[in-house]
Length: 230
Image (cartoon, rainbow, N blue to C red; front, side, top):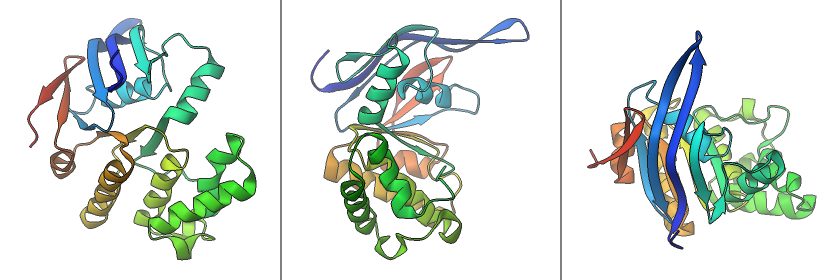
């Protein structure tokens, strides 16, 4: 695999059993993502977008096929190895922020670092710097219930970025926001790509988001097909 290819799926199939019958969601799917690449993952509901994102993010395993991330063969790793690779290689942003409600913004962003073994003081310093850079310096001690929807999503983006992963996978990150706030979150993700070189894959139904990313990959028939940006 070329050094420029950060993530590659080959022949990936995902089959679920539904009512004693196989449901083929992904079928011999192939895709490559280069370092620093921006991609929108589009397609109708039920086409397998979120399933593919779960597999690329090592949260699920393919029924068959191979997956390489940063040169690491990932599909047959044990749980400990998968967790370690996921922690350092991949950040996630979801439609719903999934912040821990009992912790404030600073603690939510520091948490992945502490779990990874970073000392608390260092973790809090990095979390504070990142949140401040995202315009949340005055909201560090606010719990999620005291933050607006856009603020909560910015905290979620900071949490995804705090371990400096080379890949960010985002599943409808603006789908639960009003259009203006959604545009700000989209611009924030793009800025992270420009400033950090982060590879960004975004599942979206938003034509505006797909247009911002510039490259769309459509899931159809269980496979990925490149298409021109909207």
